[in-house]
Length: 278
Image (cartoon, rainbow, N blue to C red; front, side, top):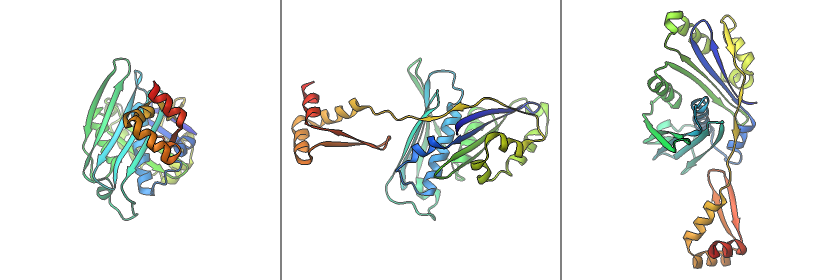
């Protein structure tokens, strides 16, 4: 499954989202060889990007970016309003199991950018990192930016990325003063194995079968990383004709790695002739 589902606790004014990615997640990390800690951080950022993009009221995209001076110096995730996702991790060296979050990410900042395609404007915010990790960081972010107390669960394997978000709506305490605490106490009993292996109906029934809950139809999340060949042709053009032809003569073709899609583009003599003729 590659779906995200919204649900509400009808009597408590509490809402939630459940994310389950299989093929889409596998496409995201295929041939990347991320260490488990890096894969988990990347998965957390992917899940957060989907949660933020789900339900956008305009055409556009959400970009989450973490830059720092640690072993991993870039984490990037982009999700469009129609839930197409792409992303990458850039690391300078290997991450060991014992490495701390500070060593992996170093000193840096988390940048959230909301792009509105209808107005062609972007709004950017900086998110201070909670020392407890990205999940705690974005629980803080949701609580502060949306004024909604929030709880997150995110787990990943090589095969799946699964996550759940709960948010306390403004009128929740008026409906039931103990509702948020009760739902939170039930939700915290879920295990990573259950989050990964149970479908949304089974998981919600296991956790909240005594609550009145409405589950909405799923939306689909897909991986899409389109090759922009023209952009890479401009790189060759900027290299200069003589250098480009020298490189072509030396290697037989010009190869450029599209890092975000993790694919190579190849340019032959006909391509180079066309680039500099145009």
